[in-house]
Length: 380
Image (cartoon, helix red, strand yellow):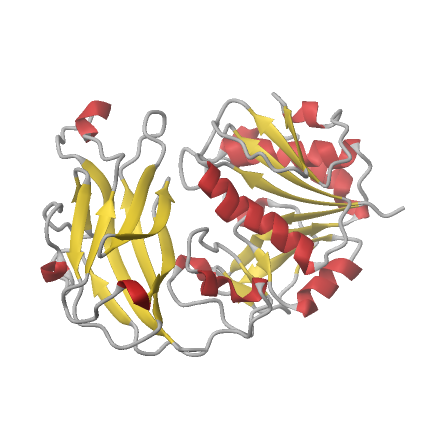
């Protein structure tokens, strides 16, 4: 009997992130129609956990504990209570522990196929879905043209490779520190026939011709995730208003109260609120708002910066910034005047002084704004 496990690694500092990133991913797997026996998320020490009705949550302390877990729930969350996290570009013991726990669980529970689809990766096309469904042997990854190496955010591990999957994750983690993980996995095939890439690392949307998409941001406007609703892919971007806020960039005159001095990669929001004066805007029923922000966080003591976006005194979005992110939302035309008097007020209740964490800086820092854009949306 065929039994397929689909898993991702996980870590979230808020219920908002569990919902926007991980529940969206779970629902996308279910809606995509991939045959699966169970969906498993393996959590690296989150301090808050979701309360989903279809999900069993089980605490484990070592990858070996996962082999003994028995759960028939549609979704299973294996939770490590201590966070290992990531120390450098190619040093992430938290990911390796979670990846290893998936291997133990797959082998221990007799799964005959494993799909590793990270929580910021999506199957977009029916063509790729069918290939994943019909392929049952080998250890496959996709391909990133952008970086010219395997895209390991989506892997297929067939019945003949599950033992190798388990064996790979039993090597000492130290042997992988500093090694490019994309080329370290003992895959038997790199499948280059599908179109896709790490689109989420830059602002342009996922193209209509994509088979897959990775590095997808968790907090963008609803239209960004067009493939989840079955909508057609995006038309070419037109009439986008883009503003940069790094030193000497054109957006700086828009900054009003609540900002530090511009730096080479952006300008810090200070204290409790920061205001941006918008220029006159074109007529449109609504706008897609996108920004890139870099938060002031500390690994152990300040894990996330919350940011509320207020347009002319109307709250239109809340974002969580645990790291540098591209986020976005829809701004209804009803909250805008479009006459050059519109204001964005960013509210940031978690601003803190770096000096509290051993850095010689007494400013109350929140999120560094790198750039933002507003794109009119058509009436349709």
